[in-house]
Amino acid sequence: MLTLTPGSVTLADLETVFRTGAAVRLDPACHPAVIEAQTRIAAAANGNAAVYGVNTGFGKLASVKIEARDTATLQRNLILSHCCGVGEPIPQSHARLMMALKLLSLGRGASGVRMELIALIEAMLAKEITPVIPVQGSVGASGDLAPLAHLAAVMMGHGEAEYRGETLPGATALQRAGLKPVALGPKEGLALINGTQFSTAFALAGLFGAWRAMTSALVTSAMSTDAIMGSTAPLQPEIHALRGHAGQIEAADCMRNLLAGSVIRESHREGDTRVQDPYCIRCQPQVTGAAMDMLRMAARTLEIEANAATDNPLVLVGADMIVSGGNFHAEPVGFAADMIALALAEIGAIAQRRVALIVDPVLSHDLPPFLTPNPGLNSGYMIAEVTTAALMSENKHLANPCVTDSTPTSANQEDHVSMAAHGAVRLGRMVANLERILGVELLCAAQGIEFRAPLRTSAPLARVMDTLRQSVDTLTEDRYLAPDLEAAASLIRNGDVTASTAINLPELST
Image 1 (cartoon, rainbow, N blue to C red):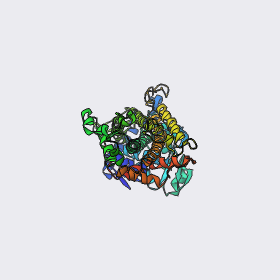
Image 2 (tube, helix red, strand yellow):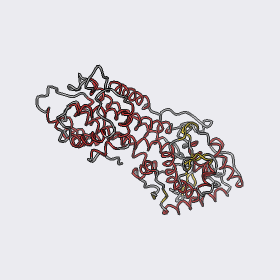
Image 3 (spheres, one colour):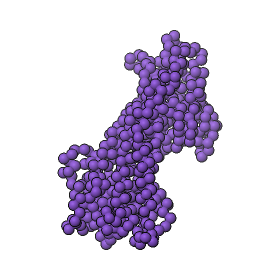
Image 4 (cartoon, rainbow, N blue to C red):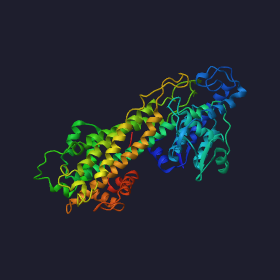
């Protein structure tokens, strides 16, 4: 079980939760602040002054005063009325990350909830009770209302949850795990559903997948360079130092290390009639490095957001105030998701051009057409390249910005929204598309390198090829290729390609 400290959780912590499903609990040091804020909310609920969401209605109904005796009903009605999500349930990995993010937000001590709610979320994670949360319904302000309502509903004994392989009514899942539903107190329903945790969870998932794909792209691009007997001169460190972009410098350095010692490279340093390689080979550090910088900028935003208090109103204990604000507006997450989408599309675009280069005998420096030993009778990787073109094009469409597509909601009270949920959810499809593009590049580059025998590639890239050949045989004649493509994509997705290099590759840090 991971212990997380609200306000200082790292991306590495969050990736562990996402990839392993680890249970989490909050550092007990945050408990006094949580309790103090809840005391302030309880006092406000029994007072005469109108405090939004504590003793008033919500949204356009904020001017309606609620009696103290009705505050529990108010919170119950809020959750049930907001359970309007539609579409397929989100993956358990995303739902559990979403729950961990909600814990972190509540743990900042500005939400005014009882410790009982925090303890219940921690117990649900520990006992693997995962609320069934539909994927559609959020516009990213006033937070991810509908998805978070489905989470809160299970805590109340409503809705549905997955438990030990079954989808059960929320109350049944809690009962089987030895837990009891909670009756929400003043402001607690609002604290649970105001916030950006759905959008942030999906954006983080997209970020983690994008970074793994990006590092894999450095490996497959180095393999493509050797396969077409490309030049390593454009990787000279002085070139990249003169420009100064950190990602470009790091990408070039990584590719130099991957290609160091290649006999294929040494064989054509002299007498090569080609003066320059096409951009998809020559400009790899400039493109992939720029994507690396973009992903790191998005990562910094998402790390801040993961540690933020994003519900409303917030209890400002030091100022002795309960203030209604707009931290639930997911604009920062929306921008980050759009940045990740741009990086994914561009990594895939240049990778696709490398695939097209390798299968083209005019440009591949004497490799056979479509990388088959007997072209004509066999089509080799002809249609695999077409598939990469289809996936590249789809990612280009999906990369269009979402954050600019605001629309008014809630009787024009919420008249500008972030669409962060849309921006973040599409990242999963984009990552999967990129993994398949890179999987095809892996297959083609390995095939091309094998055609250069007896010349050998570098030791790191030879280890990658050994890993690939444990799952996919060399293509000697046409066969049913779909399983090969999926196997190669899985090596990208699972990190096997990067791990097999046995060298240090760029790490995601902010």
